[in-house]
Image (cartoon, rainbow, N blue to C red; front, side, top):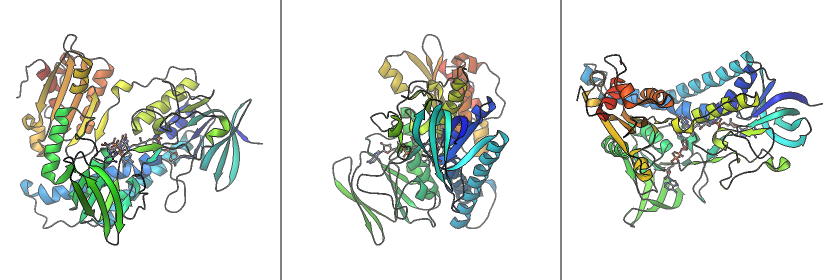
Length: 475
Ligand code: FAD
Ligand code: NAI
């Protein structure tokens, strides 16, 4: 007899574990299955985000930023520490312990919310009148019966055609987070979010970093003004980005990796590096689910096909997070997890795709929500825009970090905020105000008239709102 659950969640990344907790809060009997193993073979819930994504990358970004400050900024505060040294092994051990705290935190939350956790691979067996039979292949094999199933199996790194990851020389995000010593020369394919974040980590630690980007423009998904400012600052940091690069053969030699490519001018080039990170996007994890057994439909990109509310082609089967359409972001996966659990309970869970923030945790940080100026131009929307530089913000001066600006775009007639674009210190935190404002359909004037504490970085957001009406007070 198989153990019965109201809801079975396959995958315990940010989508799956949050969906499981919310379903349990709503009174359901919930199982969550996840196959991720830590170095000792034990359970490590949290998915890509916790194990090889958001959390470890931010741990390394923090360590490398401290190192960079010790190298370049302490002196201006009157602090002398001699020549700082980086113990890479210790930095990696700290990162691993941050990851473990998160893994353990999720196991604790499962216990607290009475979610039954199974460590192993979950796959469909068959549809039955009561729901679906799901096999778990782990330390032991068992079969569960779920009335409702939520698939949250996430994504995996995409490899260059014919160049598989060996995690020694050719690294995915996983290997990029485990480089044991700062390479002299680091190559990165793809100047997207991973390329810029991981490139920054190793650049700050002293590597010569070259990023080859296939598209002709840098950071095409961001507002043009932000992308331009970012390029200027990254150039200054020595983070070399070549756009319009067509990557050809990648050869692993005795000492490092050799990448043949054609540059934007069409000239044949070779990039010789000690390590190569390939960060050219990710693909949905659907293999191993035995989706064929129940006829679960995939879309043209191999992701699970869902409607706007995460319903799949099968009654009672839902899919969320990286394994479905939409931005591959942890907070998007979480929101879908909550919404699906609530829909199962007959409530009206909702995810507003127009207000999902994007953040790149480089230095300066980059964050935005809503439409870019170029998108509004293309759509023929009449807008007005205003910017405020951190150079004119007192707190940024005190921090010693005045790079960047906040830019706000509002509808020309109604003044409703249509997009907010930031580059500068801690904008990963500042963007939340813009998200809240847009969720409440605020106007630029609303933000301009709200009292912001002084001296804070958030005053730059208020001033950007004032700039929309051409009446900044501090610039
Ligand atoms: P995942 O986190 O991928 O989790 C899926 C889980 O399901 C995994 O544990 C997997 O092992 C398991 N699984 C798969 N198949 C099965 C099966 N058949 N049976 C059992 N278990 C299975 N996003 C942000 O928002 N902010 C960031 O700062 C950020 N940084 C990132 C940095 C890097 C280097 C990377 C690679 C990604 C980053 N992301 C970030 C993206 C983020 O990690 C993903 O969007 C997020 O993890 C998706 O969550 P998910 O629950 O859909 O899937
Ligand atoms: P990405 O989609 O952000 O960037 C991939 C880049 O590679 C693009 O600029 C693309 O034009 C380029 N590219 C693709 N094929 C190429 C080729 N053959 N040669 C040269 N360039 C090529 O993907 P990335 O960086 O791999 O990250 C994967 C996902 O993880 C992203 O969707 C992102 O949402 C998520 N992520 C989020 C983070 C955050 O929120 N801070 C941090 C890291 C990852």
